Length: 135
Image (tube, rainbow, N blue to C red; front, side, top):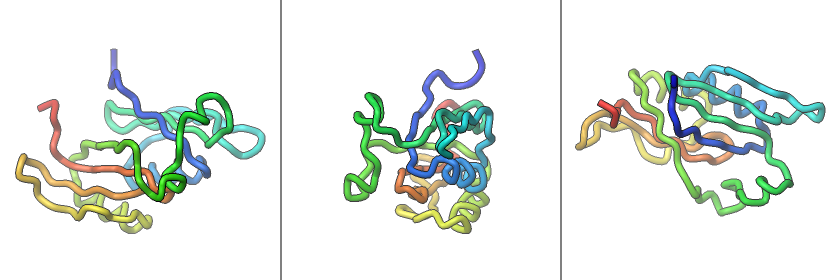
């Protein structure tokens, strides 16, 4: 099996814009994007190294009613994602240039590695760092 056995799933109000932002800011690559006639995204797979996130447009369906978006919780997240990257400073610069809201500054961590935490344009929480728990 290639890749991760755990894949994060996200919903966005403007999924096409989120896909562009995630690829530009964090370096994700589109593997599959299934667009809907209304301009939404039925399903998308974005990869980064051996990891992946799947995402789609916010929908009022059985699964969609189980989720809340950050703008519905006062900006509080119910989960966060962590990306392992080689060049944290470069990703930080791209994220800032793309308008990421930095919530924890770029710094060297006591446990090793370097990282920062930000929110994407719809408020989802992302931590990006060079610390790799697999090594």
